[in-house]
Amino acid sequence: MTSDVSRLRTPEREAVRRTILGMLETTPATAARHGRLGTVEEPIPDLDFDWQPRPLGKVVTSRREYRWPIVVGAALIGAAVLFVARFFILLPADQAEARLAEYSTAVDEFASAIDAMESAASLTDPVAASRFLQAADDLHEVTRPGPPGILPFIPAGPVADVRAARSRLVRLADAADSIAERLARAADYRESSEDILAIPLLPYSAPPELVDPAAKALADMQSASESAAARLDDDEEYATYRQAVDDALADLSGLIDRYLLALRRATAGEALAAVAEIQALRDGTLSELEAVVSGVESDAEALIVELRRGIDQVRIVIGA
Image 1 (cartoon, helix red, strand yellow):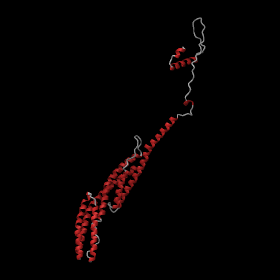
Image 2 (spheres, rainbow, N blue to C red):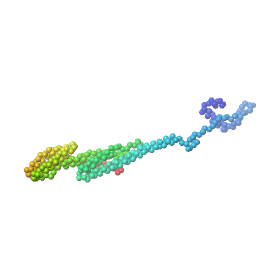
Image 3 (cartoon, rainbow, N blue to C red):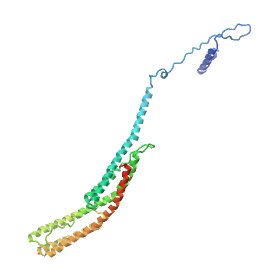
């Protein structure tokens, strides 16, 4: 039997050993074995399989020993999770809050610029119009960066507010752009018009020694008018006004000569008539300018109502 067991493969031998050991635990070692009749039964000898229990692993025998690669790997994974949470969840939220604060500041300045423009003498006041144009540019600048990016399936939170507020601010800035530029241009034209045909104080009758100073004053006025006209841009909306200015400057030289001749001849009536015609030229150009500027201001007044409504919507979104 021993030779038979030795021929078995190792797993099978182990199974046989366990079976025999189980039998030995329940069967006395001296149990009689049936033999032939008339023979003495001999006891079954003990079988020794040289069996020893397997030693337990280190993890079972001691709780003080750790698998450090696993511990270090778990720590690295935890750090990576914290980094991802900070970079893709907490950081976008912080950026969104900062962006909303920038939106609030830009909207407040824009609203303040509208207030200053409406409280000025006119909507085309140079200082107020320039401030309004700058505030509109700031709206475009603050909405240039897109909203912070976040991972899919992560609650948007304040990032969603940034998206909604930015969308409204872009529309608000686009609406303000056209009228802000028109108001600023109207203010520039009005400012330039102050130097066009601005008649100085002139005598209608004077001694000969005052003729040359009067001539110089008119020459300076003519030079200043031509310089101011040259500064006007080529905006189509003011084409009629520019043409009126060109025509007035073309007639100005003849009127100056008439005035100086009347002054030398001491004909006050002729001098007065010449100055009156120069003033009429100026009034005609200003009339053409005011017709355009009046239309710009009318459009601005209508748009300001919409702009204020847009400001209120943005403030609701950003919680201002």
